[in-house]
Image 1 (cartoon, rainbow, N blue to C red):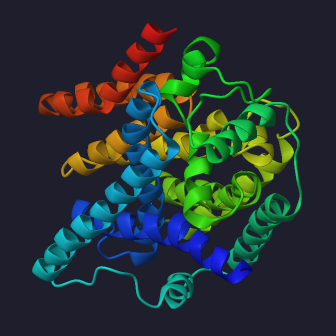
Image 2 (image 1 turned 135 degrees about the vertical axis):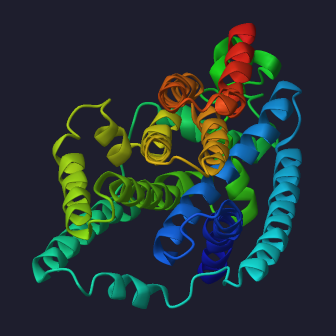
Length: 367
């Protein structure tokens, strides 16, 4: 049973995002000759696209009081269609460019990329990896109890048990029908916690186990993949500085996690909660996209397309994400457009901000 559960977890939470992200990276033309970087980008964007699909599907269903089964069914349809469609077009694109779609000899490419760096860099890399694994270990084998867990764990557990979404009070089990609008309108517009119910249905693993012990490993891995990509933009592929940067990120996370509301704290102790998932996976990627745009004079549409999925994923995770994605990417991207006089990109910027405008209006209307 454990083996079957593990296989289902890997298929739903790891393989599916990869099968979405890799062809998307190929279609966008990201890191054509740097396949390790492409994999990190693909895994990040694949998960953000998955969360974006969940946002598009779940909000109308929640507001119309549909069942969890309907959510699961539509999610499966959209994911399968995305995998088939994206891989079909990506294979055609790869054939036209005479390249391969999926990364081969991944570990050998990683090692080969560091052959020419000094030995002391390897020491720092190993130290960074050990610190990262130390943090992953605590998520996998330890437990953190947070006051908000009553809501974040109670709602998905109730959804699985009753086959409804937000129609029962998470604290008392009392039927409230449309009461979620009065009690917590942000949950209706940013139904992140229902993800655990969906993944529970698809994998057979308890939703609390997924939230506390499985998804943190994936979300934290996404976080450091994004920091790796960001360091590449910051230091122009200088591997020595990139590794030092990643090591310092680990040190900073471990050092400044004492407070309850810093990015380090929410990433290390309650990453399964919406605002923490947003801080961990969306904020670093928004920084990466802005740095990419700031250093690019042409072929910039791919970053705006990535930003659209990032904005939608942020809206799915939290009310903070609804506001945060628009407030960050809107002004920063607009300033880059003015600075470079790329006036034709204003339409793309509008598309990036549309999720914030739509879901922000919906939240205000419901509230």
